[in-house]
Amino acid sequence: MHGAEILVKTLLANGMDACFANPGTSELHALAAFDSMPGVRCVPTLFEGVATGAADGYARMTGRPAATLLHLGPGLANGLANLHNARRARVPVLNIVGDHATWHRNADAPLTSDVEGLARPMSCWVRMVPDAASVRVDAAEAIRAALTPPTGVATLILPSDSSWDQTPDVEPIRVEAPAPAAPDGGALRAAIEALRGGRRAVLMLNGAATSAAGLELAGRIAARTGATLFAHTGATRIERGAGRVAVDRFPYPFDLGVAALKDAEHIVLIGATEPVGFFAYPGKPSRLAPEGARIHDAAPPGTDALAALAWLAEAVGAAEAPVQALALPDLATGAVTADAIGRSLAALLPEGAVVVDEAISNSAMAYNPCRGARPHDWLTITGGSIGIGMPLALGAAVACPERKVVTLQADGSGMYTLQALWSQARENADVVTIVYANRRYGILQWEMGNLGFAEPGPSARACTDIGRPDLDWVGLAAGMGVEGGRAEDMERFNVLLKHALGRRGPFLIEAVL
Image 1 (cartoon, rainbow, N blue to C red):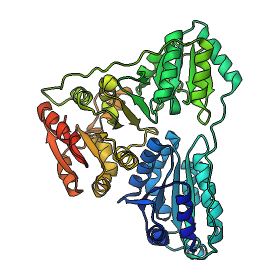
Image 2 (image 1 turned 120 degrees about the vertical axis):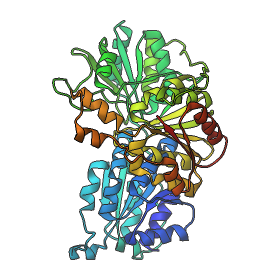
Image 3 (image 1 turned 180 degrees about the vertical axis):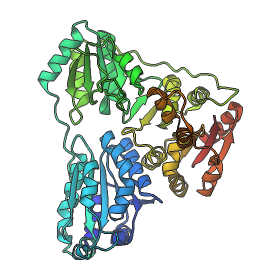
Image 4 (image 1 turned 60 degrees about the vertical axis):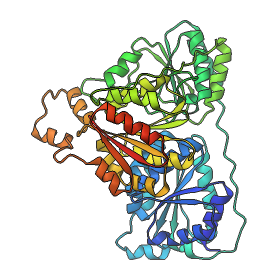
């Protein structure tokens, strides 16, 4: 068999059924192998950042890796921003990157680059496959690395000759996903003492701890001890809505983060990292916890967060967890605002929906009203690298075709990966995209005020204003094959959202703020 066929055979043996691809010449034997060995759905993308973001969305919804297929170092470089988000989300991704034939590298052809060097900062594992005979073991090792807690991006670099050379047909290696490590008993005992002692404590949650099961345990602990629950600012996936334990997301703004922790004596981390400032600010510290507060890393990423929560719940004699009642607001009317969009979304969001949140400066205005919406999942931008919303939604829709996906998309960051709309149309992905068209990088304008610039000058205004000309999102979507409509008041927005939720396939709403 060709090396590429051994690769595809290994994917199939390990239950991998999706590949988000933007291939070039060096990957054509891999494409041919997908044709000769059906079973992996190849989803074409027009930009590598769409492929890597979609693989992240697929993994968040399934817990299993999808593959990417990228072209040499420059193609990998185009996908790095969303691999950064995937790394921060700690989701499994098999990142397959083609390279020149091993004997061609010394020729220094125009596309020659240090692929391994480019891959390493965003990957938990990197390997160049030296020859076709090594594909069997190296591909299996890559899958194992991606699945090893804390899961991550494993980059397998496949030179052309390792792909096209032939090797004896072999049985593929089937990989068993390693179990997460047991939480450390000493760290848990310290956390138990903090929670039992009547002191002001915070439980900071991420990973499995923000699943419905994790939040139920955390809610029981909070009900008994009075601890405050927060999901990490960049929580990977939160299962929320009616019938589940509600959790606030830890605030992004520095001063709000400090205020949220100002009385905390103990901060217990379950699947989460310590909250720190997103950026540095003159005269302000990096850490948000008050001086003297103790940090308890009770279940670091890669350990069994549910086991840690169960242990804590039993130790403190946890009470019944209060669950969120169904609380649907009335549809908003009048002017289009971020608050109004949030209210109408909460009223209409169907049960089982997946919300992909890249609303950036308008995020909280959607998250908070949906607290009592029908049960749904909420996916956030984990690493702060913008341009993930529409690709993440593509991956979630491929992973869960029976669920409606709703993307909350800031207009500036949406332009980073606009090509995802074309892939959504091509795959008939069931995605509603709501574009917050405020014609500016609102978060940058807000941050300028944080840094003391009360009145931005003409250069600052020019680089944070994305009007003149205004983006025509309905026209852009139509050019990608996606139907859409523009809403300049909430009455029109409500009509469009009802229409989009009542049909199958991609639809875009440009909400003009």
